[in-house]
Length: 378
Image 1 (cartoon, rainbow, N blue to C red):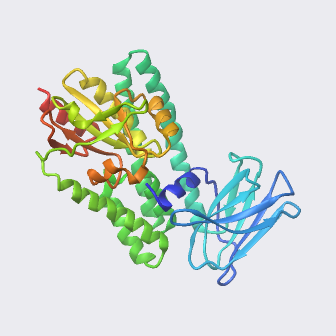
Image 2: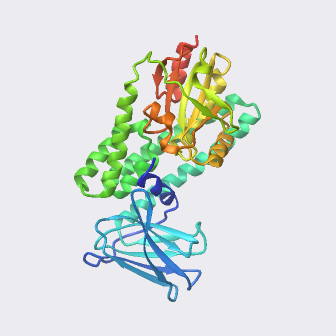
């Protein structure tokens, strides 16, 4: 995910805010803060833009307190940077007065934001994401240990439990989004937790509600563009009629070896587009590993194409997730020539190619992929 969606993710995961509206100043956004563990240093206010973070103001801490007062055009996302040691994420708009309390000593320090319903909802969203991420990380580590010990059956059972837990949290996220109503908290939770590949109709419904509720918001525009790209990608992918020859390409592995897709003719090949920074991709990787181990000796292989830009992050993710099949990337991110060749607008994205080099299925994951492989690998 990109634009505001990717910027907001990192901030939302650490958010911890609280409680009710306690005042307002007409047309102004006022942010008052108190820092617990220091009474000196500079505090910086930044706005989360479409593709970047914009510094707005800085003040020197006085007796452990600070105040910002700005005139925003609309309700939007901000963060307050405390001496480059702690970041406080919040939502604010005209007529809001927000009250921040923070430890100020580390990025893991506690903080609260009082003064608006939006910030209470962001806390609920952050709690849900943090709970899922903690459980997922623990299960992923257990999965890797089981695979290293050769306990494949137990590892596959663990994958099923991860899927079940994710499905449960997705339902909770949808319930929260519906309870929040169309606004920035709902948008953030949807963008950062619900994969378009899994539930594009739900996200599209939210986008339509946001267009009615917040028609002039830059964030509505960004979110709806994001959804529209996925809808267009889905239509474009459907343009690859089954039986269409898979476009050929060559790309480099992490060690500098070049692999050509057509060199894999004679096998069924799952062409898997992903990236180290893509949370839905990383969540899907245990399923991909499970599939590879089940069918690698049955005329099947995988060729993964990463949309990374940083080689080190790409290599680290391959190692951490146990992706032992062929991996390639041109390290151009969303500017990837290979992604453009396949009309990829969102990841994860997959294409199943038959031994003759023809596309026979698209965007199969989990049980759907396994069912298709059982069908063709008789």
